[in-house]
Image 1 (cartoon, helix red, strand yellow):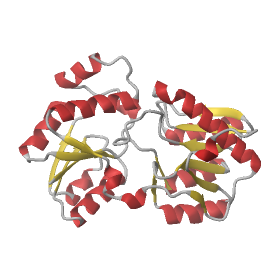
Image 2 (tube, rainbow, N blue to C red):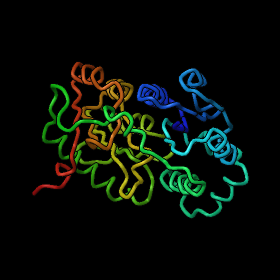
Image 3 (spheres, rainbow, N blue to C red):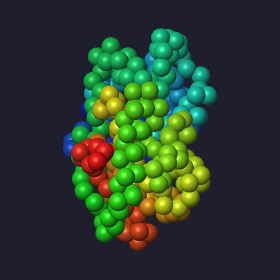
Image 4 (tube, helix red, strand yellow):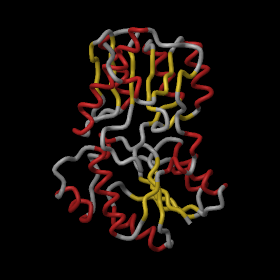
Length: 272
């Protein structure tokens, strides 16, 4: 049996279905106001909890003899800040100097591991979600877009250790937006609103981030948003980014003239 700590979006559904197809039984915990309750029909055992009830979450997995689990799905941080944590969660929060996403998730993993629970990388169960390398589709970035991607990389490489965000929006060598608490979609909308059409977006793993959790994720919805705000290029790390509905996203990007680029890392480095 495998456990699932489920946030919002389609990822928990994809993961639960794939795990069951592989022969696992799935026990899942969702959160009121965050997780789609329809997930209950996709798993073998289900419990919905208020966000921040860590002790009850651990008790659920122990009662169901679950020793391995994965975290999947989005948690809207502005909403999460407003929850009422239990004593165990408060104790963790009080012991943290930095309360960025990665720091919080690292602390959560440490607490789960202290109870004998192994945290898995969910993408290992669905490797087809990992974004491929190269230019996906018919639209190739121009020189200006490559320059903006390299600048975006330097920005994210610099701020990564500060645990701020995974996404930056650049246009013509000017940083228009850096993702913070608002999330990727809001950062893209804000950056394009400030800089106008033709923005370049890069999303990548933070430097030093624990790769078992919170891999950068993109999808058809991201491409549709970029089409709406007239962004021109979306860059992401191949193999370390989840890309949902990839085939349809490529079709939509081609139709809108948007470049999709899966990068290995070498392309990011500045050139003379």
